[in-house]
View 1: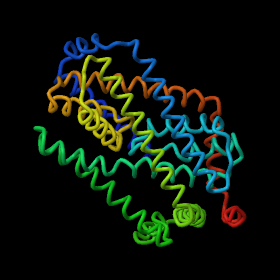
View 2: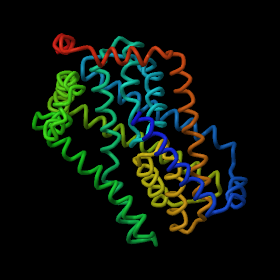
View 3: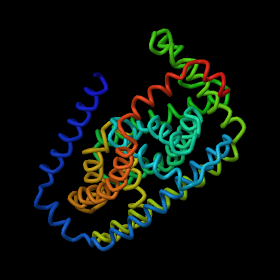
View 4: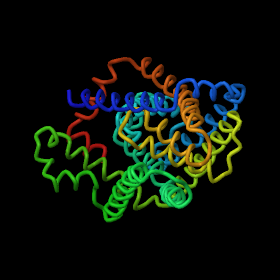
Length: 343
């Protein structure tokens, strides 16, 4: 019930923000900007997006292999898109689909649920870690170069600071051999709750897999960061093509800042960054000397590209069947015996 209420409230916030942006800028101005877009370029942008997805799949495959699980690249396509789709519609910083992704991976390839989930978490950490220096640099550059309101800047700065603190604590504790989540549960005495007690030993085993990876597979982690940079470069190319199709010849710094504000928008706890991406892009486009309507159109077209992947993920999810929720619950209720066997 609480999760449903959170989803409804966060979605309503996103819808309200989205409508507010449209009202402030004007539908007519947005439609005029949209007419200038060269739709023929969309196929090329999607092709680059497919290459970027392939790089991400290879990175995930590499993490799985480091854990001792060898999976063909093509077998990772469906689980990845399903996880992506669920995360997209979940109110959170682009997370939420990981358990479903791990379940589908188990069903498609036989990789144990805890192993699959651990590899997915490591892969997600790579996504959150590699852009941090760029995020910091971009915020400093925007503050010094452009006229952005202190309220907007403060909001993005707080989100970025929270991300840095969480990641720093995670890495410090992990390299010390401590489980980040389990320690938090113990400190706040959440582990004493009956519901949490049932899963606590399972959580300890899961965290052990992640700790082992970071302590003994640091070379793989560095390769993962390099692949993440390649993935980011392909997204950069996508944005360049999209802007060019809109008739905007942006310099690399501007594209980089646009990309950074997209990442920050998706960290916000609103499904699909609805409203936050449009508002963020409208503000930053206007600050850089373009029109606010161009920022909204840019966000709208990029969202169309993302929704293609989300749509495919939801189609694949429907083919898995509604029973996956019951089976997913069975996996997480595997009990202590299963954890010891897997260890």
